[in-house]
Length: 214
Image 1 (cartoon, rainbow, N blue to C red):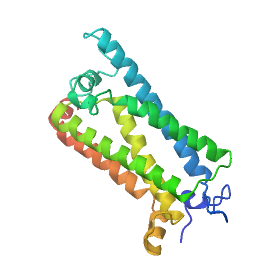
Image 2 (cartoon, helix red, strand yellow):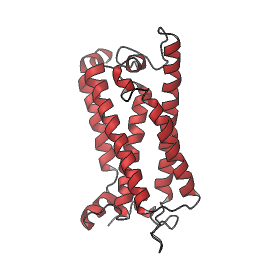
Image 3 (tube, rainbow, N blue to C red):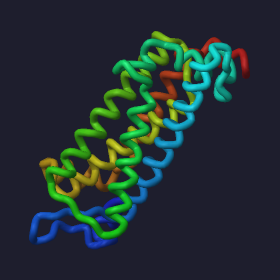
């Protein structure tokens, strides 16, 4: 079997399960958490600041409102932007720093028990489910896109998928050996197809508008 970057990360920092049941992570996965956490935090921060400005001045136009389709302002003014009774980016302001902090611990050699990794998987599952709902709302109900929101979608999908890859690799989540080997060898296929499906959905949703720009 061809060895991939994610697979070799298993031994980059001695991430095998230790005798006391603690499991670490390879550097590739750990740095992915750092980068995705930082980008997600940046997106959440910018959206939150713009939301405050919009509350102060209803006529404020966010910098990422570029045209009728790419309009952060439309997203911020929608009901879906307050799904839990407060601005959605506040969730990111809490969740992404947690991801960064956990990754920093891993870079320092921290190892965690199985329940921790399952908890991280559960958190990323909630996140990817929530952003999928937001994608649908943006495309088919609100009718606008937010670039910063799209960045949060991208990093949340990556966090979910590669946490799953990590947990399958270390048998934290049970799976047949053949399935585990396929996931490790072709770990890039799912995110590529996932992002591609989102891109196709965006293109087809506003094909008439995009075609006028060509």
